Length: 264
Length: 271
Image (cartoon, rainbow over all chains, first blue to last red; front, side):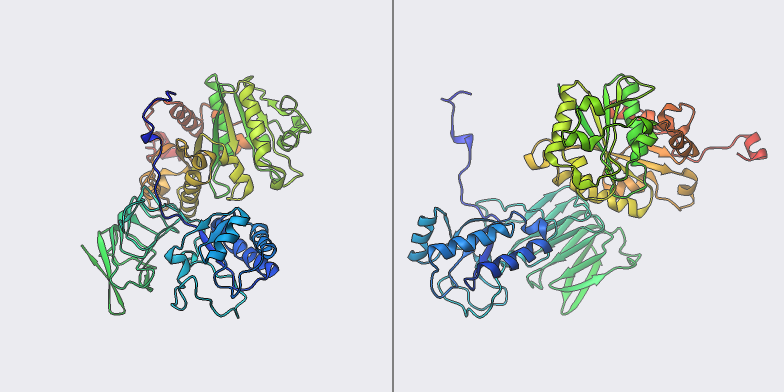
């Protein structure tokens, strides 16, 4: 290797969004935390086993002492997840992170705002009645075998592209954006998007658009043989695909509460 | 020189993985390659029977993985081809007896011993045994029967091959996928009882590397411990020879995919 060579192309350094689960601690109880997380890992090992997680202590009334935080981190670790940092909070949190030798991970919206509204700010203490450590909104769909494709850094809201077939048992989720699949979606495969879904190929599995409730989302398929299509929670299953739709290119949209499908 | 690792897998059981592993390994050996075929179906070993070496198993795969025996002690030389070796599974253990490190050590050992190909006969399912069988593979032969449940399971396996293997994890060139359609009965395809080659290719989105016709010779050969590829008179044997040639890069047209036309005598006397 030539050390004098142009090094600018050696890497790209950008801030990008990556999928990190956020463990929001509501109670300083390492044993309960460990049990709860272990249950989550068991329920969806492909999703959570060895998942990178950020510990969010901002919902505790008082920041726990170093020993307690150590115990919490250890609880996360023994549950089978990998704590990689602390969530950004007050200057106290910053000092704590420094002492622990952990990075502070800045607030990322989806992980902080509970889906059902409620408290959203990191510095607003929530009622500490609940024992459960909440998982982030990103984990809401039961992703058994997610294909985590990180969004293109720098782009604002572009669509997520998936090249090639989506195989049975695979699941693709495009958060906050459209999903474009160039290839077939097999029986038993699922494609989910918060925006629209475009499938250039056969849809034999399931497609769910508007997963966060966008009723304007649509699904476009070039070869329709779906098991199920859903928009904003309204779904239709097809035990028998109507003859006039089978193998056709169709679009699906929501008219009130009715899910309509028509040939393009 | 490293050995090319080929996994024979399917997801579903009973579709012909072991039959295919035996014939594929034998075919590669007949082409002059030095080949080892490993049975990953720990606890339900069958490959040794199909290869006709069940009475010569002293040490097995699990023994090597655990360092209780050397590769040399465990490899069973085929009685017909001197460059073909079988590594049997252990019948008395279960699949947890295999470890990723252990399997890697065995495969590396075979590479060092100058093997050209290692054929890994995967167990059914998608659990540990199947995972380990595919994890280190360079090529995959996905065995599928022309029926919907087998096709769906194969689809799942194709997805796993693209995501849960060393090549996928390291972001290397993906595993070469070969789809092998077995138990194909052109007559039943013609009357719509079975999926056609075209149907299967369309659903899975990849083309087949071979089509093995349903044949009584397969069962007979298995029961006699002779890989069916050795039987050059059987259609299944010829189809396997074609398949091996294609995997080695040769172009051969697909055979035995149309309903055979019966001759006059066959029509009179039944065939």
